[in-house]
Image (cartoon, rainbow, N blue to C red):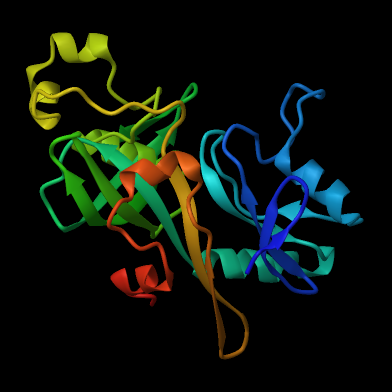
Length: 247
């Protein structure tokens, strides 16, 4: 069970590391606006820690598990854990994804507020997807995504590139204007109204890793309330890890 604090929940904590749930709408770390609150500083202040390093990052709208290192002498170990861990995300996609399982691969390059696919000079991005649910009446699919690489906006871009952007994604998603003249996009949404959300419905829900030799830790962070209307009939429990090979 996670430990409840005033502004967040901690799902795992050892002498050197911790995983805490970031709410949507707050940046992970400090931004150019020095007056803007960020999750790392709030967490460090709440726990009274002299050192707290953010090991992975989530987008502003993405909720879920963030990995922190509490000991500066364990930074290299933290990086190794991040690299070898299994990271699973829950996402609500616009439209009806036909495949039960698929993998998306491309090369991405950072741009202004978004990434783009390139054929040279980019970083390889690979994501495995498993479809958990399709709702043709309300025109959405529920998927798990497993990161094989950790590029900026990777899951969001891969689903958008395939034609099924994450619900509420205002950067890579559909808009009423774009659908008016785009018959290809209309076909992806079955010509039906597409679901909406106030933020991108992407949630870092699970992490599996080895902190100590031979001891596997599996952390599950249930999705927040704005996911719930899409999840009827789906159990968010540790069995989700078995959807993917953990090697």
